[in-house]
Amino acid sequence: MARPVRLAAQASAVALVVGLLALLVWRVAHDDNANVSSALDKGNHPTAPAFDLARLDGRGRIDLGEFRGKKPVVLDFWASWCTPCIHESKRLEAALHRYRGKIEFVGVDTKDFSEDARSWQRKHGITYPSVHDGGGKVLAKWGGLPIPRIFFVARDGKVVGQLVVEEDLPRYLRQIAES
Amino acid sequence: MKLALLLCLAALVAATAAHASEQHPTQAELEGEVMCPVCGTTLDQSSSPAAQQIKRVIARGIAAGDTKEEIKDRLVANYGESILAAPPHHGFGLLAWWLPIVGILTAAALVGIGAWHWSRVREPAPEAAAPLDPALERRLDDELRRFEA
Image (tube, rainbow over all chains, first blue to last red; front, side, top):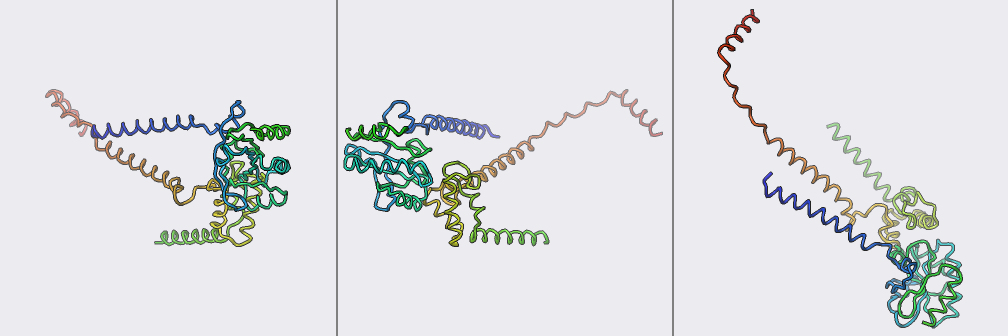
């Protein structure tokens, strides 16, 4: 093989290896584990990752970013196949009537079939609006499965906590209502 | 001639089977081609509530006479393309199908070029043999004559 051709081939091979190495480093640096839930576990209060998704009832879209600086938000990740979600969503529905006007309640129906999700809302009397996150991309940014996952976002857009035990619900509702 | 005929027949049978599968998919084959969104396996390997839900959606589609593509399109519209076990045969998904073939062909071409190159590099021809010593040559001739006699 001619010397210039051999040199070019060797340079291409080295460039390919360096490129793959850089990709690996980038992937590790942008670890998917960096989500809202893990940040809260470390004691941080991250800014709520924005999303703009279609409403499950077909009445337009909900852009989470629009609430920043205006209203606190309770974000409820649920699915119609998730049995414990029934209990949590009903608790939020009850809280909705108490905090109406002070707090925005938004459901995120995730990894779910939208027709089944609408039936589920009707069946269980859930009236707060939900968006559809069929592929679960938004859920992944907030912590992924399992669900239900409920997050509390203060007026300034910072996530102050997530529901872990039952007592968290009244505590966080009071906290973000006063934010 | 017979082999060509057999190959044509086999291709025809395969195409007919593929068409039938596309028009009238079975629950089992779709469950093997669709992922469970919460377990990372195909539906046929999962009994989770989310998998059961999609199995019901597929069953409804089959009962309504939908084609395989229609059922898959409905699932992709709802869950995104990650719901399919194999990448689609269009758009970016084509890369996943063609890249291995291109890789194999490129590797085969490189090996072929290398083999051709190496086969052209000949070993140096041996130097011409030095003339034998006259005494040794005579002795060799004598030996040969004796051997032939």
